[in-house]
Image 1 (spheres, rainbow, N blue to C red):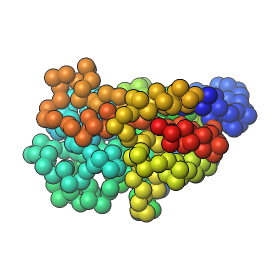
Image 2 (image 1 turned 120 degrees about the vertical axis):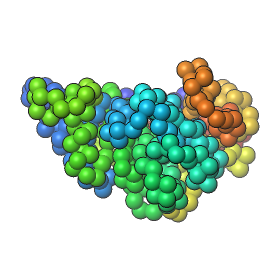
Image 3 (image 1 turned 180 degrees about the horizontal axis):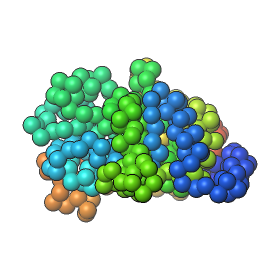
Length: 361
Ligand SMILES: *Cc1c(COP(=O)(O)O)cnc(C)c1O
């Protein structure tokens, strides 16, 4: 059986370092907002080429606190891709803002710059873009449009730690770069975690308060804040994993290359282009008979996943809440996409086997 994901195996290489670090944290007896969080924040900011990093409790919170820090008014509109993971859209609703769904480019699954301007109104305040599956969005045209219309950029980087566009890492193109460290992500911890990258000390200060009850001095509260902190245990694990992130991304890129070379052309594979350094959080193919393909692979002992089976606008939770549509591109992606195994623990032989069996479909 080739599993789709196995987080014990994916983390096996780091077990000993994790154990040492956990012991160290236990002995310190300091579990919230201490030196391990500070150290991770410094190294992750440095890795991404950002000025500041603020650790928070999850990717959803990273998006939500970024929106909060912008001080938008209820009902202000935020452009967001129609095929993203639901969390991106939830963050907008949680801040009493209005998501405006924009259809993606069917070739990259990312925001289509040519469709953006048609959705910009006098109430549009920001573009919340998503670097989906580990590929950066097409940033030059998006940044130009944002500038022309004076709207802000918030990046959802939850699937794209280390992904690059024209040599620049995601998370630093916009005013806020929001990351998740959910265990399955390329840089995943052993629980929940997230972070926000910003480039000015003022924004960093605001976010540090927001994540900690609106306070940066114990028992003195300046703003109405949240409890959303990355903890010391997870920060310790993350500092260890960050040292291996390039190795993780390189491995996933190698496996992706095997898929690109080996899979027959019946499958629509991810786009590749020299301007993009993709980190393949997910390697998806599209096929009109996706469900049969999934069955075929499972019969041959290969597990796959679907990201995602139901588009956000069709979720029960969103009924009556999403304006606009229809969203035929998003629906087509959700109907035809299949995610193949591409975890850090998979070997080249595993992938060759997936390719051989998939090609018999
Ligand atoms: C995982 C993910 C999130 C949410 O991250 P959590 O840490 O689970 O809250 C947000 N956006 C995208 C695109 C994601 O993949």
